[in-house]
Image (cartoon, rainbow, N blue to C red; front, top):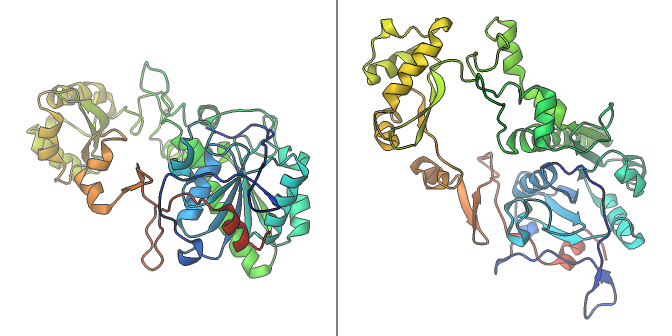
Length: 398
């Protein structure tokens, strides 16, 4: 979900045996701790201030931390946002979270100290919130001219809708992706929060921030990154626009090659209630699929679009004859692009994903492992840090 909300007060607690007042740390459910200074990932040495929120901002902070960046997260209520599971939350791994009231003078002062020492700051509030806190890009770039100021919002920093709240489903709807995800005669269906929050939001924020960091390192000047989810999602629909330009997308829902119109790019139910994802687009993969299904090629013309509804019904009748496991044994090892549909909590047990280590367990929680994989400086998932003083000391903040 998208962090289009305002900040709110968060109290401080006084740390015992010390005369300073420090923000409360988010405690990780792990016994071990790994020092950031000992991690040499590809972003080792990069300091990032993450202003707490939900959706794309913590996901981006997690990916930066996985890659070795030293990330300090400032949050009004650590681990209490929508969809966050507290200290063991996967999206909060790898970094120190400090409970900070940015509307208070001590909170703002701490944020300014960190921003002065940071390479980048990422935030996901609605336009104007950070400015009202005295922590907008004008103030921080004057303080630190090399700072990359990353902003991720649903509707962007400007435009008629910029000040409105919204969530993943709203940005998908506006940018056209939700309308392209619709079967004939059915309502559009959204892919949980993956496409806008993470795909159109966090990924584009990260790309923009890393581009701007290269600029800052080359020329010594920071800048603002405006990552609007509606922009990112729109860009993710490039294939649909390409197909339309090629005369292969007619606009009718569920009648096109990638929106369930084609019989060779569809999900089919199996005899035991499971499902198969069929994506045999290339002619040779399609031909091989017909061979394995023992179907005559001349009766199943691939690109005769007026036959697609009938051919889909015939495919459905064939796939309904065996269990998902039986189809997997026959088709998954072959070059036919057919895969059994697995749920998010079944996927970690898949043989291929286990072999690759696609999922890992951290702080007792099974979760996706870092990606992508670098050959020389690999990413690493680490528990959330639990030592505010050490994190601040690394940054030279007392």
